[in-house]
Image 1 (tube, each protein chain N blue to C red):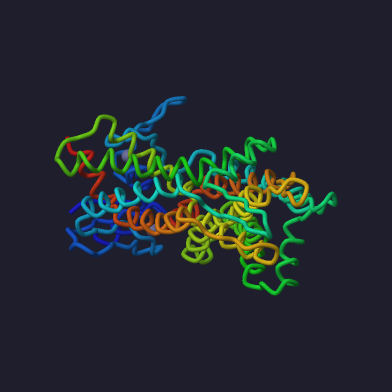
Image 2: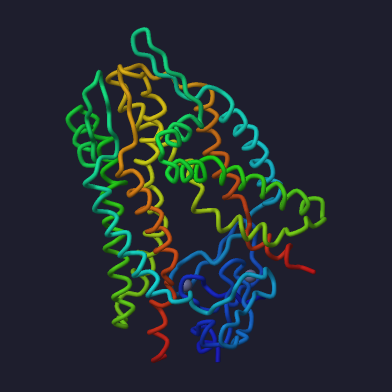
Length: 213
Length: 198
Ligand SMILES: [Zn+2]
Ligand SMILES: [Zn+2]
């Protein structure tokens, strides 16, 4: 009796866990076009996030497409005494390498290139693993999801650097920095991948395990 | 004894009464189910009030000053966002303003609004939806990332000019720490129990 009770999901037991306040309550099986509300906090209840897979795919693809202009177009345009210089994310990284600040180059590279790419790859892998009903290493996949969800926001750092530079370097004809067109694309990539990670439901990883149990 | 489902794998656990300072982890996926924190309400309130003071300093005093020869360019926390706005980057300016200025402020105001009445054993109106909103804001408050951005910008400009950090930068840096402490002293489990009990 004990074992059976311990290894059951809320969904299997006909229960639902509130996403906002974590109260466990009976799943009222709302009719079509109706939503169930949490008896404690009033938040919308669903046993699994709604259209999790489709929504995550759509957002992920949008982010991947926007990531191209974010890298090709300039993040900043610097004007010094009449001559303009456009800098992309990558040229920013190589500037820091050549000027000897490799730690900063590493920060920008990790936040702006490595993290977004890793996020794309991990989310694609998680989505496919759920869609192909993989039973391999669910715990590791959950940890992977947890990391993806936590680190994504750090990609925003380059956008903030641009914000600060734009305020500081405003010396008229002598020197001036303006935000380039890539800045808004890059910011969108970060926001959209954050929402994509949030739309993915890690409980789907475990649902396959319970069918056989 | 109460039942709780893991929010990452949905496994149902029966949790016994736990001691202060301990946390319960899911036996299957290892995620934290909840933690019981000492004097959660008092500590959160104290950090929040400290945070609001630092926030006031961070927005009103000089932020960074760039000196190059005879030229001096002084900025405030909001200068960058204002400048982006003037350059026509309205969406970008709004995004930075939300994530680094408005949401952190709202977070602290919500904490004060929900926790102060709890401390006095009364209940603020709309405390439940307000606290739900707080939880949804959490990933979108990015002052610690802005702080990293400041450091990168200082290094970037160090070659061409002298950057003098103002009082506001110090306050902003402390705010990052204080807000992190405020949020990590929240005992979410306890708050929902208190808010839900009537
Ligand atoms: Zn709830
Ligand atoms: Zn779990």
